[in-house]
Length: 136
Image (cartoon, rainbow, N blue to C red; front, side, top):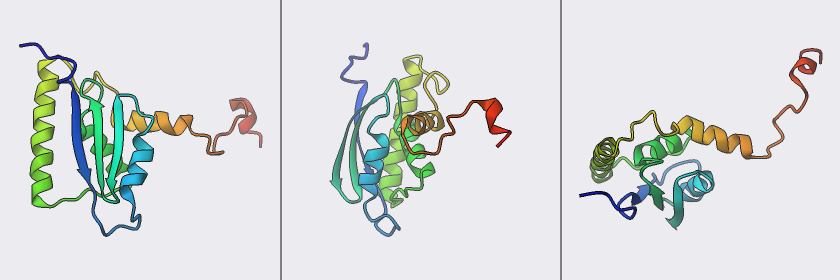
């Protein structure tokens, strides 16, 4: 009853609230998730609906959604979405535990977004050596 690689690729929908300062949260989330290791594809269905495909051994839906909420995006918390989210979190945690993957084995969500931030050329890095910074 071994897992095939196809079973370890998950397809999930992420829904965002409509009333938010960013009216196109799905596009913002797709840009944030585009270069993250473990994410296979991100498809924008509508301005508040995102379809995502990812490798379960590298990421879980809970980690992805916690990262998105940490970046200021708001998930839709209607009862149906909360129940689906809780079911996905539980089944993915159980599946990962059965495969021997714990939370500490994969990169934490904060590290994933920190890596992406480091790779961006945003002009906020100080390229001077450490010993020069304290003199200026």
